Length: 130
Image (tube, rainbow, N blue to C red; front, side, top):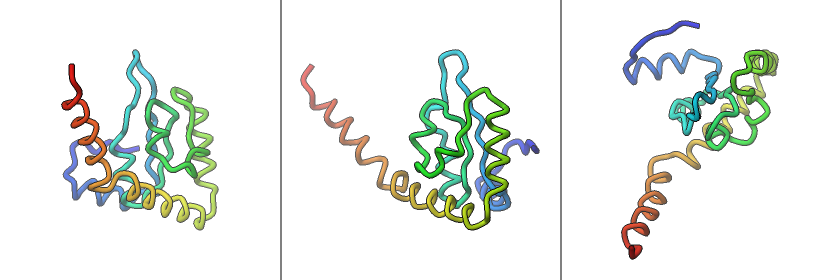
């Protein structure tokens, strides 16, 4: 693991392009859970498979095919087992996870997919009588 500090968007894209997977080991801390990690969406848009913990809203932003690769929060053994499992998969399976992540990201998070429902919700709240 190498901590790179602050990166520009082009640096982030370059680094993600060189990675085999994104590993997000979020955990619940003092009533705060990971809500919706943007890095997961960014990784999926670039075709990077995601290994993450079952914490907060993370399962909601992953395609169902990746649920089996999720680990338990605050459980290094669980995370290590998922990483070993992923590393042992054939490349065709890695590619399938990558393709499914890209498709899921475009279906659920592409520009124009997220904002309209939020705007409709907000408009409904504004129009609702007190």
